[in-house]
Image 1 (cartoon, rainbow, N blue to C red):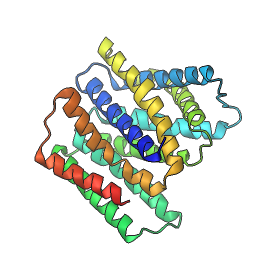
Image 2: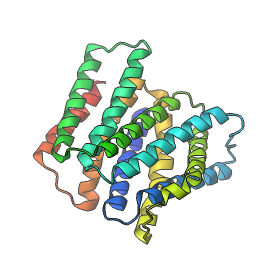
Image 3: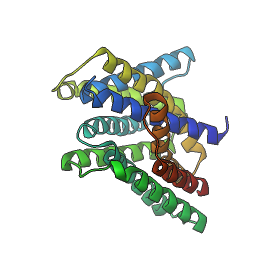
Length: 274
């Protein structure tokens, strides 16, 4: 499959994940701890079943260091993301999350000795300006602790993306990461369930998030990351809020304004330049 289509499919999965998380947590269908637990467990189980059916060895023993690193990054992203969004508006959360991801990946890209061409620099600036303009109307002054949690979540996701550059097999790497992350969620179970709220709707949303949007989406992302530059991997993720906006309009009937269209065009135009 062409790299562009794989990247787009991964971005759609990320946007769906964001929507599922918002649906589950915003109306109290499930608490953040249970959502994270079910998301990671369902993702790990799905990937383990796929590995068994395809007779693909998981290989935890041969690559345990990568497994632990990927698992820690994935667990950190998932847990801090869920708890941070309880106290943050959608716009504020997106600005903090993607802002920390972009700054981290762009800094690493530059630290590796890469230089931005004039076109790439223009693309980065245009896409970032469009993203901030898109998210700013929905942003509000954040709770300091929630803001810190979301920034740590972004740093964890940036680390998870960087690890994708080292993965020899995307499916095996994601399976390993999910198994370690699921094990970590079980180890921290008493803390995760300090405030427990659970409903059938919440269970379904968390399971779909883990088994489909996360597990399969992250495999696609690791395939894409192996084929594109770190700069492209960084900037392409700014398309997620744009896609989430479209999904929200299609699934939830949310209104799309002229401002949404204008800023989305800036984001996508900037990404195209990179």
